[in-house]
Length: 148
Image (tube, rainbow, N blue to C red; front, top):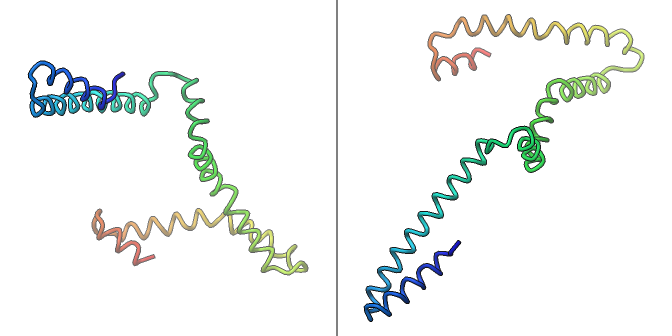
């Protein structure tokens, strides 16, 4: 594959040898450079599209992409674990800090039951708040946030 500079140099040299003028040679060299650059851009865009759509490589390509973009894969896995592992861990750490050891046997079951009932209660509250919403646009969303 030729580079743009090689294409320009060849075209300029050929035109000077044939016509004997430098101005015409430079114009033809610039046109050749533009054509070569456009071809290179088209090829790069096609390669990017093929890479973005998976390139038809199947499971092996998927595994290679997981390893190639390992930081994104790790972020996705950690973000999925946050709700099921991170938040409960933080909650129980807070409960350990706030509750004295003598009271732990008394309050920890209450914390666990309240934690299991909270999603049900919050779902009912949100259903009620959304039923108060008058429009289904940004204004309605803003009124819902003000209500909360």
